Length: 261
Image 1 (cartoon, helix red, strand yellow):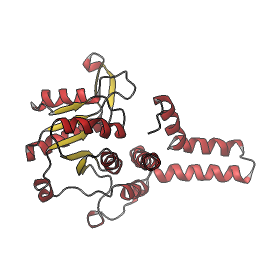
Image 2: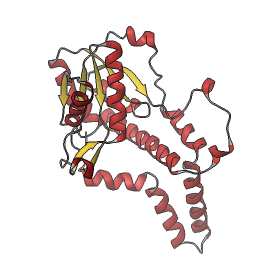
Image 3: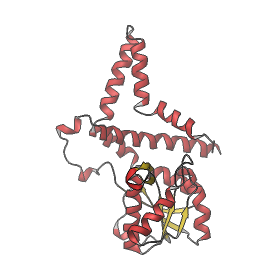
Image 4: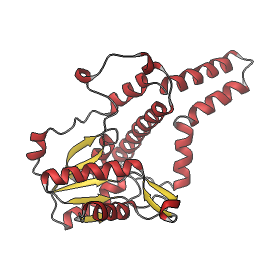
């Protein structure tokens, strides 16, 4: 894949994803506010910010992305997997309660907790993947390994502590899984992240059984009727929209690079 440094990646994300792209549109609209196109851009920016901040739009976007269904109990028991492979998601730095040490961010904790639940149901060992994105924090996989051992008394089968993104999660873990004699894995990550994780895993030659969780949208048969609050803008819904759009952009990028290679 084409290599981009962390700063360049962050700049690109800020420009093409909300709220950065919306701020840019509003700024251009303000600069040309005396022209029709400027007023149109301003209106578009306001409407986009409102729409992406509502549950209606955020959940609709999630439904377009979260296409891999949850595993049923029967599928779990008949998966023929050799291990549970879990991808980490983020770190919180400079925590006063830990004397400034790093700790797993909320999404990482959710993923390792779900992997632990599957471990208790199946008895399968856990393989953890995740390094330090900027190189200035403790690797995510090491933090997750420590959490598993301290909180649950479970030692991971293997740890990939070098990966900086989903693509590297797959390609760096492939050799580790082979060395451990693991041929098929239950892949644990959030439902919105699963399509990109599966794409990366299969490109690396890993045989995965997707085990998504924490869906942002409910299936049609479980979806409650729309309520007035579903149309009200909130930060939580804007964050959901950002996560989904981030994954959609990642899928396009990975697809283009992989097909070009």
